[in-house]
Image (cartoon, rainbow over all chains, first blue to last red):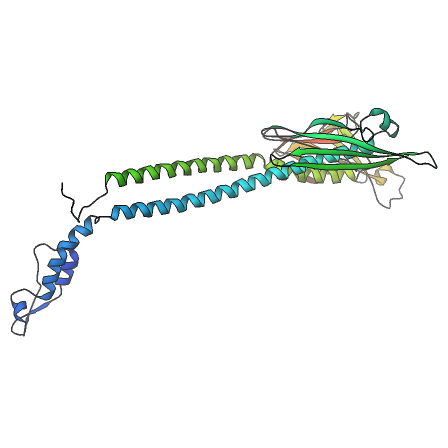
Amino acid sequence: MGRWKILTVGTRSRVAADREARPTKIGRDASPRVRHGLSKDRLWPLARDRRTRKSASLPRFGEGGWSLVEMTISLFLLISIAVFGLQTMISGWMMQNSAIMQSMTDAYAGIETAYAQRWTFANIPTSNRWPVYPASSSTVVTIGKTPKGPVSATLVRTSRQYSDPLTGSQSYMLESYVLYNDHLRQYCKVSKVYRDE
Amino acid sequence: MKKTGQQSGFTLIELALVLGVSVMIASALVGMFNAHLQMMNQAAQYRFLAKDAPFIGLLVTRTIGNAEDYRIFAKRGDAVAGTPAVLTGSAVRLWMRQPNSTSTNINATYRQAILSFEPIGGHPGIYFFLANNNGTFPPAPSWELAGDQMTAATFDATSGVLLATLNGSYGDQYTFAAEKK
């Protein structure tokens, strides 16, 4: 019957110790190396131990550079995601501003329509509110207020006059144009109302 | 000093580079985060103009557009009492023709309603009060046009056209013609 003995080594890493914790047969059946405590398992763990002991606790030469590359890539990805999110926010913000401008100019064009429908017919040519084309009037009006302040637009009014040759009755096409800018382009909302006697 | 193949740790240049790049990217991220917060805050401030005001305007215009006639009052109590109408106020009384009505009773021929901005239950909004066939207005609103951020609503007929102005919480204002077109 052979004896079982756990071989221990003076200075070992945990890996080496685990490897050496395996029972090694000592006795007549064992090889001469084993009898002298020089098994294969014991030889290479010691040799390996010298390499791994430092490499396990401290980075090898050049690892710092790789960390820099990894960190840079990670931060680049992070900032890319942040820029993408910011662009999405800006797009949403611009869409919201555009929607506000649309509703405000629509509302003001509706006000112009209401005035054109309500204006006393006899006063249309004399009031000069809608000058007969090619004449026109242009004024800057406040169409609403945002938390940043009043919103202005340019209002252009003109009209087309028609006299019926048979009856002599007058008719007008009252036109109001609401012009506004959104920093890039100029837009126009049109209100046209036909009035006749 | 001899440089061996087992040199450990970072060099000063590596650390400086990492710190520099990290500081730059962190600054950019903080800036973007601040911009993100500002945009979210502004989007919340503009929500009334972007969503609530056009929706309320559409409903008010449709409601008043169905009326044959209207009168403006300073407040709902005046509209109910029938005090002399004014040109600017927060309540408007509507007369809406009943379809297929053959009654000679004006209250049956014209259904009356009041559209009023006021706080009810601590909640400011535009409320609709529909009178019964006897011309009596209910104490509780029939339905509500509530805007979370609406602080005031004014009806004005000074210029001959009924204009409604909605005010938001951040000084924002939305004006529209609230009558049949």
